[in-house]
Image (cartoon, rainbow, N blue to C red; front, top):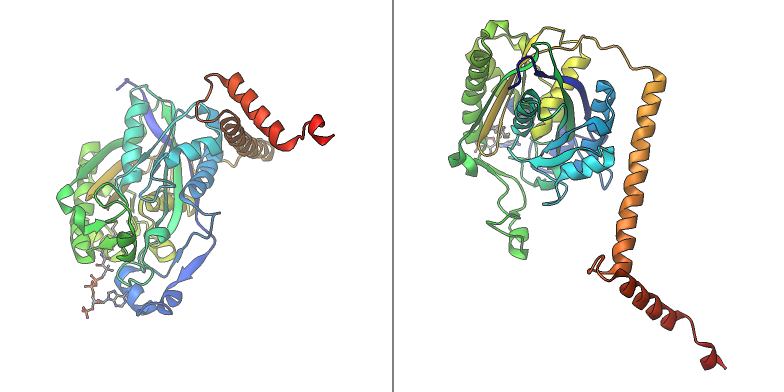
Amino acid sequence: MSAGRYAQITGWGMCVPDHVVTNEDLACTVETTDDWIYSHTGIRQRCVAQGERDTTASLATRAGRNALLVADLMPSQLDLVIVATVTPEYAFPATACCVQDALGASKAGAFDLSAGCSGFLYGLSLATHLIRSGEANHILIIGSETLSRITDWKDRNTCILFGDGAGAVVMSACPQPCGIMATVLGSDGSGRDALVLPAGGSHCPPSIQTVSNGDHFIKMNGREVFRFASTIIPKATEDVVARAGWRASDVALVVPHQANARIIEAAAKRLNLPMEKFLVNIDRYGNTSSASIPIALCEAIDANRIRAGDKLVLVGFGAGLTWAAAAIEWGMPMPLKPQSAPRRLLANARFGYATLRSLVTRAFHRAYNGVLGPEGQENWRGHLRERVDRWRHAHITPRHKKE
Ligand code: COA
């Protein structure tokens, strides 16, 4: 760690799909009721991705743009883009690479991070250490999910819980002692069967059999996850508070992973903290996995629940089983002065240019490969001549043959 170098959140943004599915909507397709879902989970509705417009990368890109606008940072200033997700755009390449390209973050490295619903906090911890050690100055961390695409909408044990969305933060170096003061990461892989997507990976590659068994959908032991979460949320909170050198009573706001309102209430009771100190927005979004904490953070800021100097705890758990927590001393002046209209316009023009550049570059890649074939640059003149000759032969009838 470099002395006098800290890492703080300077930008934040979120994006959720427009399409909303209420508990009543679900009650039309599975045997359940609004009353059961709300009393057992605290959920009233969730946002669900629609068609090609809402994918993990597109939601992440929109959340990332919003975070960059707040941070007043150019995409080219980013050193790294991390996307935490369990529903990546593709198995590979990384969703983060799609986002890096769409944002025009031309100098950034990019990779995905898989740590279940704790993924965003794992990313935050990693980014903190990269910034504090001097390896990076600005890092974009995004939690983005389209869980609706791996949800069995006929399984009432799981389909009531999950929703789609993305949340992002920009983290930057700062000289004042504020920002992320401590983090805690943990894992117990022996509990991995409690929350799993069984098929599609190396253990069980995709086949007609796996699809017909519904093994591409989330499988969950709800009670086991509930028991684990109710213990680990208070424990991780206590650990990170101790690591930061605080007392639990110093904490102004806890932003927990939004999996079940009853889990949050149980944690509040164990920590002996009032529920007013917990941000709960699960009623409108359900469980959006790695996106839930950054989305809740954005909503806490919008609701003026965070002031400069406040001590916050972000805490989550998820598939793995994993858990993570971050102790944050909020460094940014709140409420933040809104950006001037011309600056905003310029930033949006930059995003528009990045989109255009991406389209043109990808079209160029396709055309280049189409002309040159798999051999690439080797003997490209020969390949080009051969292709032109073939085309001429097929399309231009030689004069002497016409006559
Ligand atoms: N609507 C109506 N009834 C339902 C139902 C639904 N959607 N889902 C289950 N039930 C029924 C069960 O069949 C069971 O009936 P039975 O007693 O006749 O067998 C009864 O309700 C109780 O089921 P149970 O599984 O014990 O409910 P629960 O109180 O444990 O709540 C969860 C279920 C899933 C809401 C809860 O266990 C939970 O939230 N677990 C954590 C999940 C989680 O956080 N996952 C993500 C981690 S990142």
